[in-house]
Length: 199
Image: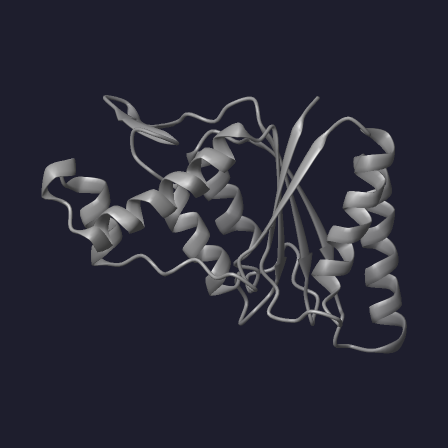
């Protein structure tokens, strides 16, 4: 049995393409891996606070010196990090907002990229500690950006995943969602065809 952790980040609900992709992923994954455990964390519905002085204090101060706010921030970060550590497969669903990922997803990443926990510094540079995991990134984009200079989603997330040791990362882009007609249909069809191969 594998554990699958899904991170939803779209501000939209009913009309969200990235959420549609997530539901397709879940149904296909369950059909192929019925024993697997799937956990969904929705950082749009239940946002994670942005990195702040309380979280930094929680990370850096000894237990006896932490304030109640710092301890609460550390507890939240620990919960999110332990959830990631326990997962065999990570799925991030992300619409493209202003050429990049939603700030809610960035806030989640800021809680789980932790020195000594998900990566460590060595004499030869940083080393990821989450090797052996797989990741899938499901994106929805208004235009067509894959491989172009305006795509700040895929390069950033590849770097972040590699930094913590996850190098097996598959991106599935639904592009052209705001271009209408054939563009939208083609973009969804391509994304769904790639999803069918994943499970």
